[in-house]
Length: 80
Image (cartoon, rainbow, N blue to C red; front, side, top):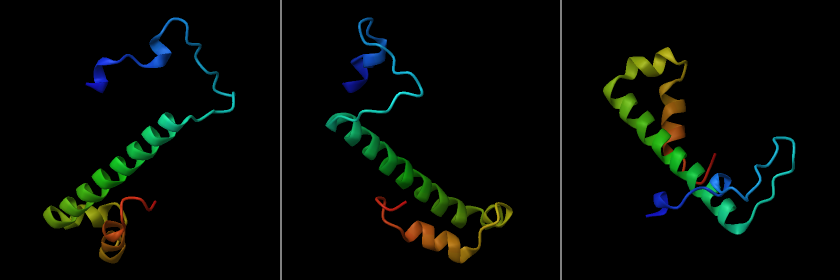
């Protein structure tokens, strides 16, 4: 349902913020960014856990030890 609402930058009267302008967060944008970061971390850790089970040789290829992978997987989603 939220996908049907156009992004504010797509509205004609909403100016696009220049890259060098300071970013102003309102409550909704901050919450949206936080949820997106948490979701990305959960997805990354889930994927890392699956890959470490299915293809442990790939973990070695990216230069991580088994202990590093286990420590990353064990982190709660709110921790970076």
